[in-house]
Amino acid sequence: MTIKIILVGGGGREDALGRLIIQSGSSLVTVMANQNPSLAAISSRVIKIDENNPLSVIPDILNEKPDLVYIGPDGILDTDLADKLTANGVRVASPTRKAFQIESSKAYMRSLMKRYSIPGQVPFYLLDDAYDVETVLDTPGKEFAIKPVGLTGGKGVKVMGDQLPDKKSALTYARSILRKDKKVLLEEKIIGHEFSLQAFTDGIRIIPMPIAQDYKRAYEGDLGPNTGGMGSISDANHSLPFLSEQASSTALKIMKKVMESMEGEGNIFKGVLYGQFMQSRNNIYMIEMNGRFADPEGMNVLSIFKGDISDVLYGIADGNLSSVKDVRFLEKATVLKYIVPKGYGENPLPGKLKIDLAGLPEDISVYYSSVNGSLDEFEMTSSRALAILARGRTIEEASEMVETNLYRVHGEYHVRHDIGSSSLMKKKMYM
Image 1 (cartoon, rainbow, N blue to C red):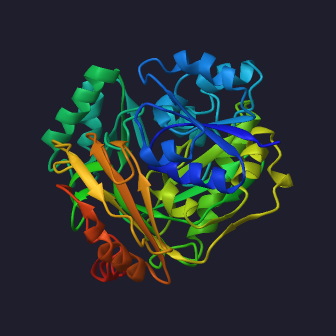
Image 2: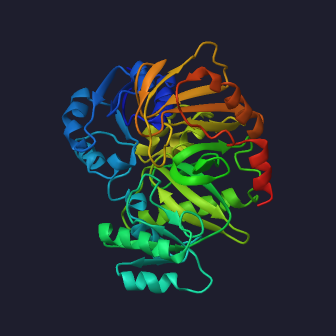
């Protein structure tokens, strides 16, 4: 009997995961707000979800009698959908809403780390008063990252010296968060190399994936506004050339401590745990913890995954990852560059795109994200549209492979050409 898996989400991460689900021999039903043409093409059925009322889709999901459900988008994970499906006897390979607090509430994440003395802590201040904010910002010799406490789609963090040129602009931004959320998080600014480590977990066991790095700034040279991510890289050795040998193991220990602390409080996390870390000169710091695949870094690791992803999802849902014997990743570097609307990050101007898929090389993957239409002609939304990913021997080779295939995309769009390039990689080696 064929296993039926329901995948909630219509972005690039879900496209990459959906293809692996089909490759594993399972059938796929997709629940999404947009009409992602790639997911639609491989799904036996597409169910429309109202993002403003995601729980209304529960009857449709139950009618499908799925063997398993996986929920991808953070906005939907921060609802009761996973809990209500579980209560109806559905196997779910995603965290409960309470467990998803590790991402949805930075206050919960920071206080958890503090309570259990988890390594990698960034000095922070959780404040609800504008006077206290001004006092902290006046700390001599210190700069801060200013963050909303809740979900922001990767776009709410602003850092002094980067997006915030002076104390006045920092105070103005912090006050705007206070007015909206009643609280604001100030974290001491850490200088170094940021990287992402994702892992499958059943709440007790954890299986790490290769390290990747995201590029959030909109323009070449890491300039411009923060975005949800313009592209990402991973290396053939599953680390990155500018990281220390201990970076991966240290980050994994921190993630294990977080998971164990949650389990000890009866708040078991099952799903994909994803940590954003910063390697400074002397330490590895945990910048954020998330409860789902990274975007875009999730596509980097899924594009080199070898094994049966359905077995992994079952192992997560059933709390039995130890039974999963085959989880491997190709020893190839990957580079992903996002095709986005012009003005993305500030004032996006959606339009139509066409893509020529004829003769697509084996080591090139095209993942569809927030678009509507067909595989070769579609409309962009105000978000990211198309991910072009290449697998190569080196990061630089993979970057060049993406560049040589951009001719396939026709229309008005923006892309960061420098991601994974020789010049940018050399610059990072000497930072």
